[in-house]
Image (tube, rainbow, N blue to C red; front, side):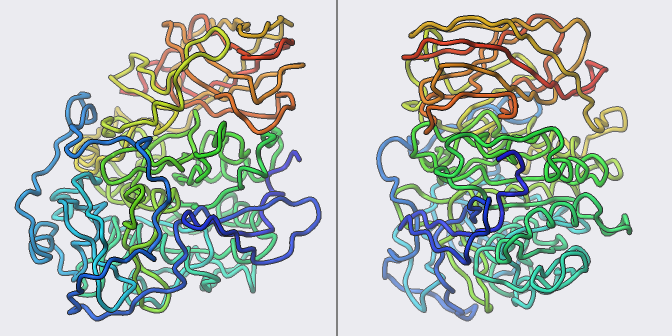
Length: 605
């Protein structure tokens, strides 16, 4: 299949706990499954009053993954490293004095009765209440890692920023969502594919994502989203067969003619299951869905965040296998636990840009958010949870910019530059060699102390550090849309079992990299045993594709890899694309690379 418009019509949900897939409709011919990349679907939640104090009962029904195991890593105190403008330790705000829910409200400057349970905003080893029960607390505690919002809400809360949730719908009548809901960019795909309409919720997933990003804060009700002052909209394309491509073309290619109503930030917690993409989906240059997304970013200034998937337990799972996730304007998000460890279901890939919070691995603790019908839940997890927390953070950071109308690249770059690098990868997944090349998840390219990980991207969002950089942003720092150049090498070279072969690509002009799209063509080299690496002109090695892909077919030029690690590097010089095989012998027929970036090599400052 060559068109990712064909990925949408059969909508399924994934429960991390039960791994039960419940399909909402029959597939049309030639379509593969699309699903919400969600945490536990709890089917509702507890509509308790603000005065409910809870009790002692453990909330074991509330989801969480069954990841258990030491693979997730993490220590109790987990010293952070990296992040901030200068690459040093991020300015973590002291929360040690927080003990009661009233303390959290005072610290955050809000009056929401359950703000203390929104641990991804402010964690301090609090026990999280089970909001799906009339009484009872979760048996897990939140530890101390969070988005480092700190005292940001005294100045910024996302007000004036428009965030859109593409999902199963959005309970626009919910007591903790309705005050900031807007119909302008919302769609009800049950009734119309082009006209604004209230996005009737077809499940619970979209409302949970919406609450994480922008549940209304400081209103004396329930809890709060990360960008609790933002304007929220939504659509229900996941609950209405065949509307995926319409969603992209309608909302993001054409969008609203009133520029003051355009979506600023888009959050999508859905994707294609691993067993449907194991052969690595193709994407041609004329793909209408990809072109619509690119139009939305470059013409309508939308910053896209997309969940990278919950298939990380499958050997070889890679976000780039889903064609949509390999588009350079789509920013993939990984999932972390409460101690900054990558949760082992989080799908890795060279396309991962940032990480957000999901839940405590092996326990019941998820993220706390809204649920349809004026209810709340703490069972939301997965990359579905991580993505809207990052989108909400982006809303707060966007409001803080000292320049008018920052571009999607300005906003994303600030989030990357200031991200907290103190994240623990699943090192066991990246040990040893592929062919003759040593495999590792992390690479420090030498640009601005940035470090990229195949497991977690550039790090987890640090709101306090990002707001500080945004407040100091000046006109000469503006980035704008990336240009592109195409380079290639198509020399047929042999690859022997246990070795590597390379395509050498020369770039003759200065060009600062934003991201790179890599495609290779092979023959008689099974993808399951094939690794791809990219070597930079300054001799850094970047993992592009890991071994273990669930297919023995060949790679071709329509199977793309979005590679984010080279951000900021000067493309001028010698690049090498390596194809490495553990067991097969065959031919490496060529490599084609599209470099997105800037003619001025000092664009990214």
